[in-house]
Image (tube, rainbow, N blue to C red; front, side, top):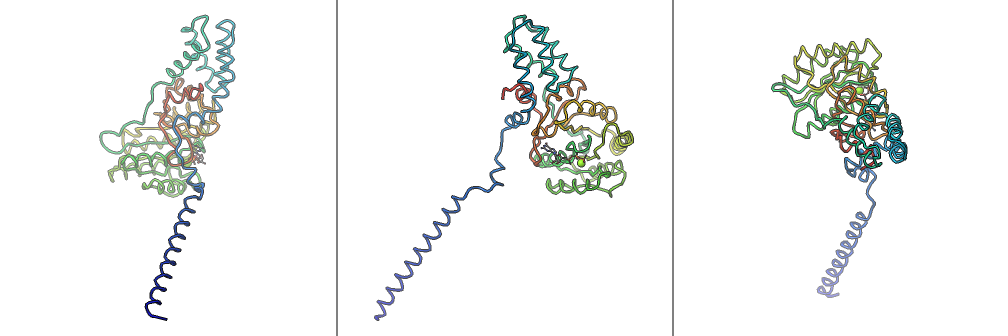
Amino acid sequence: MEPTLIAVLVSLLCLVLIGAGIVLLRSRAAGELEEPPSSAEASTAPKGLTDRFFSGLTRSRELLAQSLGLALKAGGPLDERLERLEEALIGADVGVKTATALVQAIRERARPDATAESLRQLLREELLAAIGPARGLNPAPEAGPLVILVVGVNGSGKTTTIGKLAHRYKAQGRSVLLAAGDTFRAGAIEQLKIWGERAQVPVVAHQEGADPAAVVFDGVKAGQARGVDVVICDTAGRLQAQRLLMDELGKVVRVLKKAEPSAPHEALLVLDATIGQNALLQAREFQSVVGLSGVVLTKLDGTARGGVVVAVQRELGLPVKLVGLGEGIDDLRDFDPVAFVDALLGEG
Ligand SMILES: Nc1nc2c(ncn2[C@@H]2O[C@H](COP(=O)(O)OP(=O)(O)OP(=O)(O)O)[C@@H](O)[C@H]2O)c(=O)[nH]1
Ligand SMILES: [Mg+2]
């Protein structure tokens, strides 16, 4: 065979091989694009805050909607309609005292022939007045770190909230330090350290069984020494009836004040939104021992009994400052009274 012919055949062969390669690569790429997204990707789709309030409060809203619809729409004397409204509010975990006060306020403003819509509007206004304006977390003091103490009964979501809060402050460019004040429950220190890693913030911890007051003292001192912006102190879950543990919490606060007299600048009670009226009892006891500055309402994404928010704010004067809408690090939001009331009344 002529050498030129061989050269032509070899070049032809190369061209065919290159062409086949390109076709193969293209079809692979197309195949990859056509693959469905993995479940992990699918589950990270963002969801609007109002939507999440709305779905979190489904149970409360449904309870309220059934009886509220009846109470508002049915004919008959205004007094009878308002009585039914009061029952509906109690059924939605608003609490007897608060329901009575709300209905009394509506009675004073409603016309005898009030339409269902005007009663609903009055209820919306009175609920918003009872809850009060949105209240964010307290600002940092003039000098030294903002010290946040987190308390509540077992499993209410304290440690998870601390992890989320640390992440939020970090995202705002603030430096954070966590103090592992739950030395009581096995595994609690490790759990906080895991949240510290996730949020990429340091954790000050002693051994299990150590004095929690000493841990938070060291946490605040370390925060001051390192020039940290925010120190968040975890504490062990305790029932409000456990006297010894409640006394221990009193000591934690006294010792915190030795480290920094103006601390804690924020004392947050973490309440599980699924427990309803029991939240009021808890709040009262913790309030008397700690002097709370606000409430974090967790698990509002579950089968929440959200009406209790109104009672906590009105009867204890404690603002709900934050809400937990899931177990993830981003699932913490400022409490928005308007979104909340509209979700409760079904106006999402
Ligand atoms: N769905 C949902 N689950 C939450 C939320 N916050 C916390 N949890 C879950 O509630 C459980 C208890 O949370 P923790 O943060 O350990 O509660 P804790 O108050 O620190 O508990 P103790 O330290 O044992 O008193 C965990 O399974 C959390 O994932 C929330 O907003 N929504
Ligand atoms: Mg905990």
